[in-house]
Image (cartoon, rainbow, N blue to C red; front, side):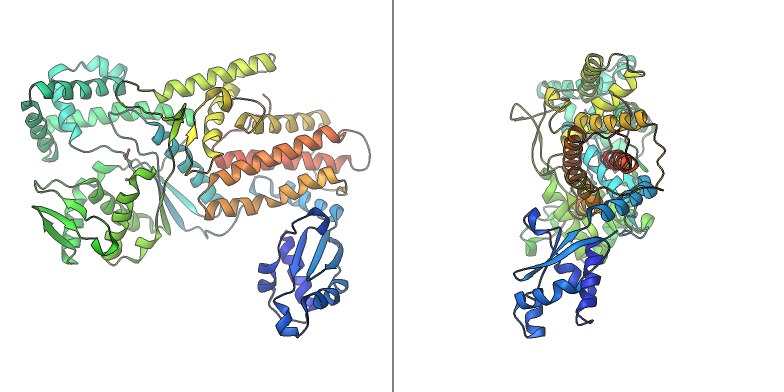
Amino acid sequence: MELKLVYATELTGSLDGMVEVEDVEKLIEKPKYEEQGDLAFPCFGLAKLMKKAPNVIAKELAPKIQHPLFEKVVADGPYVNCFLNKQSVSNEMLQTILNEDMNYGSLTIGNKKSIVLDFSSPNIAKPFSMGHLRSTVIGNSLANIVEKCGYQAVRVNHLGDWGTQFGKLIVAYQLWGDANKVKAEPIKELLALYVKFHEEAEKQPALEDEARRWFKKLEDGNEEALALWKWFREESLQEFSKIYQLLDVHFDSYQGEAFYNDKMDQTIELLNEKGLLSSSEGAEVVDLHEYDLPPCLIKKSDGATLYATRDVTAAFYRQQQYQFEKTIYVVGQEQSLHFKQVFLVLEKAGFEWAKQLVHIPFGFILKDGKKMSTRKGKIVLLEEVITEAIELAHRNIEAKNPNLANKAEIAKMVGVGSIIFHDLKNERQNNVEFSLEEMLKFEGTTGPYVQYTHARACSILRKAAVSSQTAGLTGLQDSASWAVVKLLMEFPNVIEKSFYQYEPSQVAKYLLDLSQEFNKYYSRVKILTTDEELESRLALVKSVTIVLKEGLRLLGVHAPKEM
Ligand code: ARG
């Protein structure tokens, strides 16, 4: 139910078709103060057309407008203010939500066109970093939001599975490696080998040449090199998939950098045909000085291709494969220049769709104000962090609700949910301070708080043994329920905003507001008293569970019925 549209239609009718409904709808705003009603129409724009002062127009217009969903319409200076009828509006609203259930808030903006989301994308044989965690969580939520808006989401994990580091790894493994150790703890062991390679190479520089030779062999398809690379990749991927399982994140494709190896010549040929390549110190580059940017390096003097070449190639491939309406790259802000260059290379090559590529950057995760790093000595293994969150959640639940069935399963939902929510409640460009105690609190602006509110609402429904039927609803007129209803009404708008701004934080903040408003309602109103509004109050509670659960799902967070 679009109340703005209803109001605009009524206004237009009273203006004898002098203006278009859509134009009127665009002008309708929310009044600043509650006492001014729920919707306001400013008459300034009509003054010229009607040759009257705005406040005169408002005075004439207001009494003409009547509708069952409006309680009253009054002139307030140059504005025509509309007060909604709480009872009829809440009644319609609750019926809509109960009928649409999890589809409430779904939009048709996307028209089933596809959007590719390139996210997570860790590097093989290296730890899954905090930056990759942010990319995973934000990308996954954006994929859910995009689907909710009627698009088809294509979730792509553009693995960092190619590059000179594999030459080093192969050499290090041949010299000092142990297959069993790699199998037991692939990332830890491969990282240790990588670090050892660098230490030893300082003493024996010849090792670097050896590594280059092995990377060349790998690029030329040498079987021994390929077998090792494949094995490193598989073992690493298995370890990453433990994290994806914990987070409950899934991909449609794991086609990473290596996938494009045999497709790069075509890219270079194409750029050459378009006359975009120039040589610079033996390397092939695309000049971008007209954009005030450094040239984009496409091919090194030794013939090797680069990260950017792979991204240009990936964009071609995906355009052919998915005919995407958009591609969203969820990657840290430190790669902004890279994406600017890649997009401009494609634009210069004359591809219209290059304008549909967007880089969605995000800030760092901080610990005590410092960037949290997974590099070298102070490596924090992400899996350990997540496991710790789950353990802490388990302890909290044990203290609060010791008789709960399947505590372990719920602790996982709460522990993981708390990490995800903590990340997504901040605008993505901000840095996030990482504190397990903070994010696991059952009160305050946390995921567990929203989950707990949802569980509390579910328990009210259990007590009432309610059948969620929509017959016999009367609607509600008290101000406590109205505050909740108004928020429920906002859900579709919140989804739309979060989509256009690529901001899951819009959804997260909304869920906090709704939880807070519902808890206020719960403390003020005796929900389960038997009277003629009981069914409507239960419908309100049920609607809250629907919207909280669906909102959390959009963030990638589960909503247990009990906790
Ligand atoms: N593997 C890269 C890194 O860890 C991120 C890849 C992002 N996606 C892309 N299409 N470049 O820095």
